[in-house]
Length: 289
Image (tube, rainbow, N blue to C red; front, side, top):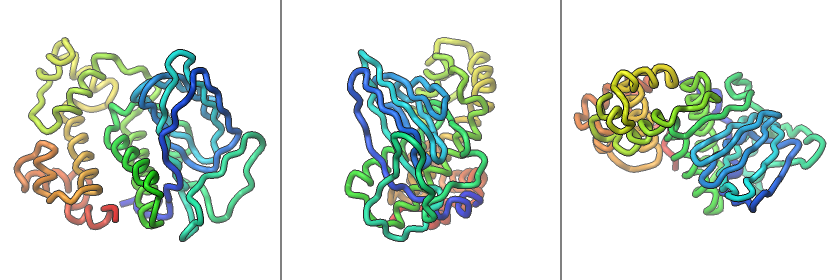
């Protein structure tokens, strides 16, 4: 897999949840990392490399290497943000302290042990909603919990860094216009899929959940997600299956059942067609220690 080679030296070096006070403003002129930032509650905005991104629960922002950022929390309902900092190319084998360098003003001197990725997909600010990338959200929460336990082996930091960058690339590829506002009806349908992913879901089911017609369902999916409802559901199931293989000890058959594919043979066929590798081999390559 291309990302396994491209991001093999990546490492997660910081991750946490950060509550903000009412109207709080914080600015950094330079941050030596690629950062994934998402809103858990409240609202506000961040200005990332000059791009203003309004934040509410479920919204996320990806900030490229050596980004500038200004946080502005709402004066009435300040946000709680989650963040994961990844070094795309980190040659340190056992850093004394997992940390990321920030500068309030000026620039940060280059560090030969920490470098950016050449991948052009990760050189710009990305803005989107986790309704379209639920596995990225699951992975980010896991990263915060792992880091909160006191971090640990560099091997795990590398696996998490690689997985986060790979999922960000995937999210960017499936969001042709991530800044376009998503209709409320479509967000309702995506939440329905997220909750009932393990069941059979038809366009008529989605139409009932969003109080619209099946033809409207298909039009919204094609317009905003560049997929049919069945294609999108298949992607959600296969990405959830990959996350379960990465982070649990469930058998391959049990993973299939958990994502709504009860036939183990059919699940194995779907997984290999989607990921280009068998489920068992995928687990051996990517499972966290």
